[in-house]
Image (cartoon, rainbow, N blue to C red):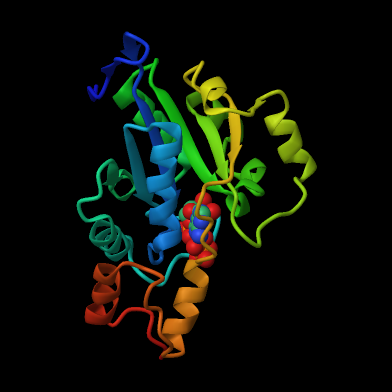
Length: 229
Ligand code: ATP
């Protein structure tokens, strides 16, 4: 078990580890992902954010760039940012990269009392009821939904059913229990950056500067990734 538990002098008691998983294709990782991870850590007082590239994404077409390259870009993008961790656990598993399996392995690592959170952007949240074993997500973790510009839409009925009775309105209420609740958050910087737009601009030979870290851009240029033809 990973030992990040530490005493919180503010409450004079042992504080449970607070750990988040932010999964995605990261094709490529950009400032929307990275700034969200940093602000989540700040707003929720997280000890660590595991950023986990999907090896075989179950819910979308296979990315054109290999999982090893996507992981390398994620590592380059995170650099030495405190509390963010480029986690390769889905690359070490065969078959579709189900989040329920990933959360189970994080739960085993951090123990039953850790406050474990799965973070999704609002666009991903809208499809949550269609994921593999959606109830299991809440058996292992809380779900935190982050607002994304241009991604507001009504919730489908199956999602309403999945989340019924789970929603809380503050981080304190979320962390009363180790798992099973839902919190929707609007982080301070809601960056309208998407990997789809970055890939399109790269294919068109347009600049993507300032949308992703310099180190990620260098990796893309060196590897001649996302070029048309
Ligand atoms: P694509 O455009 O290829 O769908 P993406 O930019 O949405 O990619 P993903 O790797 O699919 O990136 O996203 C991983 C997770 O990060 C998802 O939960 C997604 O909602 C969230 N996310 C992506 N971009 C942002 C952003 N700009 N702000 C907040 N969350 C984001």
